[in-house]
Image: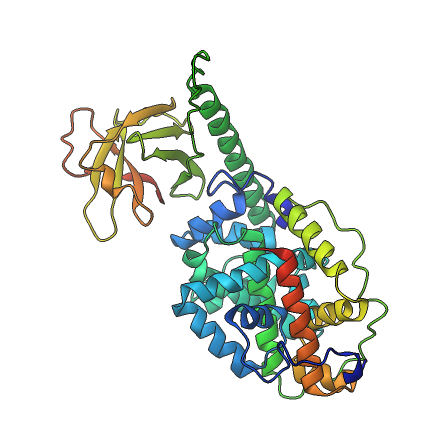
Length: 192
Length: 250
């Protein structure tokens, strides 16, 4: 799984996932298959989170790995960890697919106060991810609780501004303003 | 939630004024933009490095949430379909699961060992601190990036760490059987779009630091490929004649 990357990020291409990615960039199919075996479960989980329908999530997973094969050379370990890079490709492909679906089934209303608030304990992550996590949660804690819940809802469900406005029965401008202000506040707290 | 909960909106983003690049990147990563906006921003990121960095910033910041999501094993057909989409011949789905995960962990284990070996080796190479006398000068020694060179079968074969300030490279081999034809490994650097340049003859079973010929040092930059070829002991260093047994890009 993604926790495989336990070695320090300070050793250049030092983590196994990053080394595998650099091999994939050179066209090594065996490294690509090893990468798939090691990360497909996590990335499929991410696709399923955005696309509740299994067949859609499977298609998204194919989008993810074809993109990884083609874009591996663009991975830059100085900008992101391999884990974050792969996870975000999965999320982006899932959201792209979600957006292209003709009639999106409306999900249940967003319950801002419950469910979305507490992610629960997470499995041990690599040191850098743990630092990122602590920082993210600390900065989110500085947001007003309902704004925090809105940010989480937007992220996990991949809702557009328009959809959030419909589901919360609030004016679009208010939702935009609310989220943008929250993002600016987060940005200030998260630092450079 | 209602508009009444919101600040007046007269001195900040109120949904009408154009958002900054940083905010656009944040919105893209948060996932609140529609399809057309996503595509235009993604296309922009491909050409605009600074904007791509803003996106990477937010992706890294939100990444912890994604690792909270429970993994779900995809069906075996997913791998087959990926291979088909990439135009590869179908791999055997029944055996590839076990073989693939074994290959992954073997690669992970081999690579982790190599990283540990290099870390220890580099620590041992650290020059002794001079005795403290007068103003103390600490010697800066930055961590050098490590370039793995991979064998044809995808296993790591060599690790190379470049020290540009000294014009040397540390070469760490994974010991293998000696070549049956008595050839020895040679390290080459292949700058993008150019012919290979000879760097050094290297040991097949011992770590060593070799000095790079001064006219080749400029080629040891990101984008160049490092390669190991097997050459006869008395070969001339103009161009590789033997097989490339391992390679990796810097």
